[in-house]
Structures are given as C-alpha cells and as structure tokens.
Image 1 (cartoon, rainbow, N blue to C red):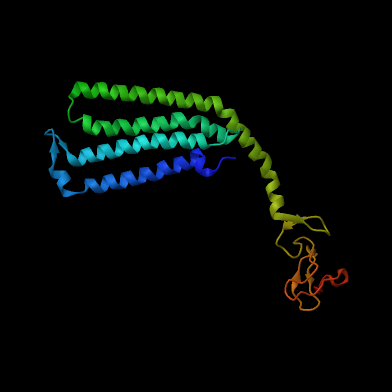
Image 2 (cartoon, one colour):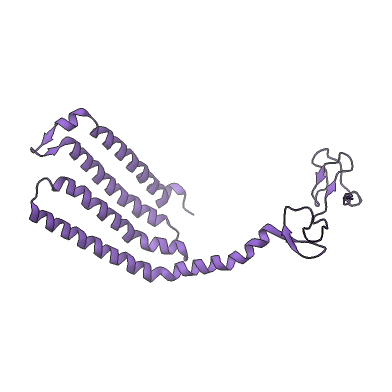
Length: 226
C-alpha cells in the first residue's frame, strides 16, 4: 500500500495549503496604500492587477488540487465512485464560473459593449455545456449511489439492536444501559463483585483489577437486590 506522502491525497493537501497562502499574501499586498495610487495603462489599478494575479493563481492551484484529490479517491464502487465520477466536471464548472468573473474584472476595462456581449456569450455557453456534462455523468453513475443508499437502508434495521438488549426473563427489549428490565423488573445483567474489596467486576475476569484477588467461579454471585 502506498504511503500517504506518495499518494494524491498528500499532494492535494499541499496544493490546498498553498492556495490559502497565495490568497492571504495577495490580499495583504492589495491593501498597501501604494497599490491604490499606482495605475497601469491608464485604467488598471495595481490593486486590481494584484487581485487578478492572486485569484487566477488560486484557480490554477485549485485545478491541481482537484486533480490530485480525485486521484486519491479509492477506486471502489458505491458513493465514493459516484463522487469520483462527478468530481471532474464539477471542479471544471467551479473554475469556469469563478474564472470568467475574475477575468472580466480586468478585461472589462478594455473592451466595449460588443466585446462584453461576445465574452459573456462564450462564458455562458461553456457553463451550460459543462453543466450538461455534469448532469450526464451524474445520471450515468447514479446506480452506484443508489446501491450505497440500499446498503444503508439494509443496515438501519440493525441499529436498534446496538442500543437495546433482550431481558433474559421476559425477552422484551430495553436499553442496554438499564440494570433492570422496564417491562418485568428482572435484573438484566449479573453484577459480580470482588469478595475481598467489593469492586465491581466483569464476568470474564480471573483477578480483581483493584486489589489483585483471584476470582473463583463460586465467588461470582449475583448481589442481593432485595
């Protein structure tokens, strides 16, 4: 089995941390007073340029993060396989939606109305196409998700048995933590105590964990509840 350092999950974590650092450094740089006073090409403030570079760098790193995170998902059936299948179009959809807004913040300063219509027309077309791709992939892999839901559904009936136990006297179910049956009042669990120190013991103990006294079968008797 490959170590975590050699897996895509380790590399994905590196990219995620780098994204956070890039965003932090970029936004801190944009707060410098000189950035708001410096104008490039007569229209673009240095603050906007720094934010543009920061956000585009973060988007590229996000793509690399997504690629490695998807590769790290196990190649098994069920819900994880469904998530792995839709991750590629979902990540690409996020990148396009965010990226077109980031690019327009700079590009919008240099193009006119016709350029704006063309740009957003292309952006909308890409978003629609990727959205259709995502829906199609989800539809194709939905059986894996349905199988997982069926497995969970089959497991649910067994959950109450983890919280309850049957009374040895009447057979009715009640809480495992209850000392007496809530239906007939019979003790649900035998309580064994050390004859030397009186410490409560488990049924399979051979020595008392409190004083070390050896426990004989004849010493393990049910206390008087009367």
